[in-house]
Image (cartoon, rainbow, N blue to C red; front, side, top):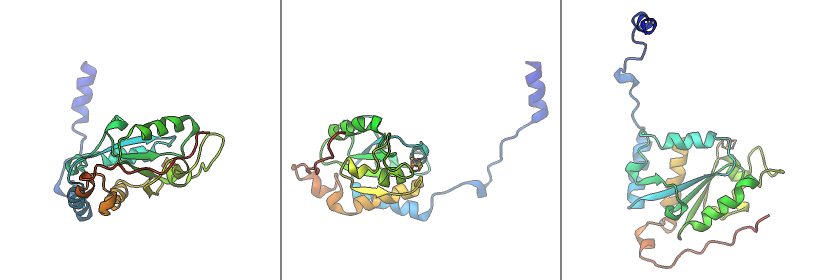
Length: 195
Ligand code: SF4
């Protein structure tokens, strides 16, 4: 204990002093996207993210998107644990064979209308893995994809732009008032057969 106290007195305070120039504030584009999404969605958007064999860098960007700086929950967007509560399936990775069944089950469990985003080069095209003994390549070969967000990995603001572009068309918005009044579920195209 004395050793620790001695070290504390010798070292002093090493953390940085926060000065006004070090405080990061959201960019004007971020504020604009936030306002647009709030208007477009009208209520919460629930996202179920599935890692279908990613290297985890895409997940790190998703985690960054989920931090207070981007204020996702303030926009009514949140990640949920159960696909039964989700409106949007966000898929990363080159669809490895071991995850394919779980991915398709998550998709099937989602209520209609449901949307699918391929996030990152791997999910968009198969990326550097393409199709091989362990991976099934682009997500669109397995599920109907509404939007692809390329990048290796895509930055949080790119993901936000993608979500905005998906909902900019009112017909695509599951919570858009026009859709909310319609009880008819959107039928998804048939998916690729299991291997
Ligand atoms: S797109 Fe790049 S960052 Fe994302 S899972 Fe693939 S290799 Fe990793």
